[in-house]
Amino acid sequence: MGSQATAPQARARGDKALRLGAGLALLLGCSSTPEPDPRYRPTENVLEVIAVLRVHVPDDTYRFEPARDYTGRNVYRSSLLRLESLERLHAEALRAGHMDGVIAFGKGRSLERLRAFDLAVDQYRIAALRDPTLKVEALRSADVCGALHEASETAVGLDDLAGVTGEHLPRDTVPDAILAQFGDRVRLLEEVADASEGTHHVAVAHEEIERADVARARYFSGLRKVLPEGDVRAIAELQRVVTRHSQSKNANRHLIALANLYADLAVEYVEAYPPESLRFDASRFREMTDSASRLYEIVANQDGTPEKLEATRRLEAFLAFALRVDSDRFTP
Amino acid sequence: MIASRRNSSVAVIALLVTGLAVVTCRTPGATPGSWALEPDIRFSTSIPEVADRTAAELAAAALESDPAATARALRRLAAIDTVLLAAEEPPTGLGSLAADLVNAMLDDPRRYREATRELLEEADLDPALRARLELVEHDDPLKLASKRMRDVKVLAFGRAFNAIAEPVGRSIMTQAVAPYRLASSAIKYAI
Image (tube, rainbow over the protein chains, first blue to last red):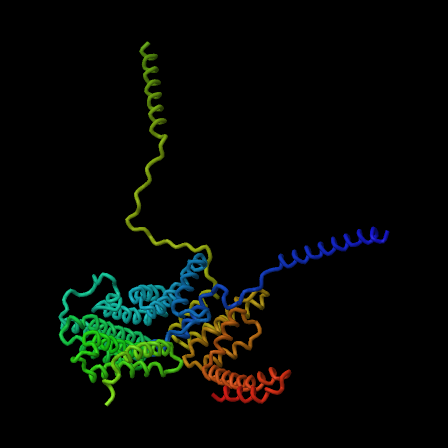
């Protein structure tokens, strides 16, 4: 009797628990998703984009890395993307053209920092047409970007050297002719830098000068096996880059490039003249290894730089190679 | 007889003309050729308001780094908001964005952070703007350096504390080896 009385009660309790669990699951399943971080909401106003961009217009991107915005992306690229998105999404509201000058000018400021000088010229000219307030500065900036674009097309660039087929490389390898082209390019860029004194375009011009010098050094490094005294020339070019651009944000990269060249020369020397052979000159080998090691150590001792790790590992690898050479050649 | 023959020929001619007209006029006429000079017509469905034009002037003045023009545009936006509020209409919502844009013209990072701090004291900031400005306020190199130094001190204290707490905790049951564990931990900490 007792068990017959408790069985329906137990069933009822079980049903109640099941209904409660189902209700709870329904509540949890239908709860709204939490609000996303307001930082990552889509930009809704041109003023916001222009404010973020304006803060970073005077930045010296020659000595320091380009700033990152609140999403961690390059601020110039993200400003350009946001302006283009606003133009697309709010095309009807902007169709009257009251913001055309401002948007075009903002895009010009972004594009010149992204090395798209020809596109920046177009945007600045649009800004000059659409907004009389911005006309003077827009035309000045268009002239500067036009000169930068012209200079970047003058000689062999890093993009040409990185090409797979080499179709854009000059066919003649006469050093004087190539040097003259690089000299013209740097001269044009230095004129732009002098004319832009007091504006942010000085930093942009210095970056282009650095790229021209690196392209020149890379060109002669690539041809060191072909040109007479090619190795000495390549070392001299890389040393020139290190000396001229010691204030650049890429100074450590230039030091690593020079150290890599010394390391390559040391490896080639050991392959050409094995240590056990009579022609192996220990002092010459020592000179190359000391130069490479010293340069790697300079970079590896700089805390807080991203190149520190690379230099440390390269130094370890190079020392492992150098220790293979007969050690008693270096003892008195 | 001659009159009836004339009437029938007129009728035939009329019928022929009508049939011809019906046949030739079925297809639509050719469209006229395009103009040699087409005007660039842009029709906007919405006319920009005074606030929109003032915002455009403010942005242009900020990009031009013209403090007088930006101050003028800022005052005009504030006046527009005052008029809208007096008419019990919603404000433009551009006040704080405009203030941030004017602050962005300060090339000195310290002054920009101080101005941002003052702007953050406003209660009615947009949450997205507030989040972004808070990031700017915290992006102070001296504050970040102090934080890193504090982190180093906390790590040093934690390492020292663990060097004592770990052997003591492990020696609760076996107190005989406690001195050995403490000495070993002290040597590891010193090294």
